[in-house]
Length: 144
Image 1 (cartoon, rainbow, N blue to C red):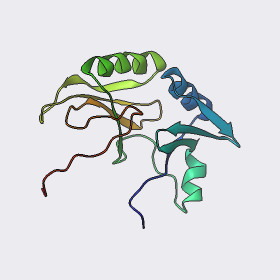
Image 2: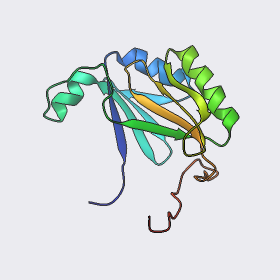
Image 3: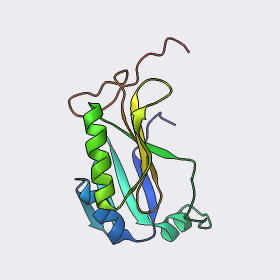
């Protein structure tokens, strides 16, 4: 298996609500056959009905509430961008779950959930600089 991710699919309970939330944050998607596709840098973010997604994976749908063990991350270029994005999240119907602050390892971060409870981290980490196109290349951690 090559070391890459091409699509991240989020199971949602209300496709129109989920699409509206991400569009309110400035994302632009395409709806095709009850699925919404967003280009997100070098990968795609997909919104699809929770039940349909579970069935497609051969799984029984689990509870929608609670932490699902996955956090998506959105790094930005400044602390101010973190604050601006959190305000937009709240206006769009998301929930800030961790206010922005300098975290235990020294960079400015926060967290929120979308209307379906999918967790996102928003961070300005000077140690993870972003390219002009927004892509991230992890630094060399020196064999740690």
